[in-house]
Amino acid sequence: MTAYDLDGTLCTETPARWWEKPLFMVFGDAYGRLRKAWETPILKPEGEYIIITSRIESPGHISRTGTWLKKHGYLQDHMFIMAHEDETDQAKFKADMCKEFRVTKYYENEPLVAQYLRETVPGLEVVEV
Image (tube, rainbow, N blue to C red; front, side, top):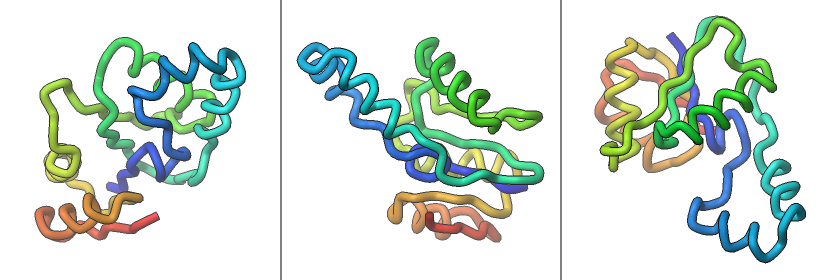
């Protein structure tokens, strides 16, 4: 099974959450258009895969992320897994999910997370994007 990180791997990184509200209040719709430009597709995986993201599983994130994934053709018979609110260590969360779903190849853009995955998930090939 192949798995992909979301932000920075399948789509460009989104800005830090604490920036969003103040920038939207200052720049209005211009900020919304800029934010949409950041979330453009990077990779187009083929075959059987899952998406493992450390975005927090909340109604807003689930809806927005699911809509984006469907819009760009990522959820056709594929699933995505989001972190729970109590998940504070994104590398550990991703390692646990890779073990649970028996992932053999994982695409990741964060070098420290990639290194952690290599060290903690036996037999996992980690491709840095």
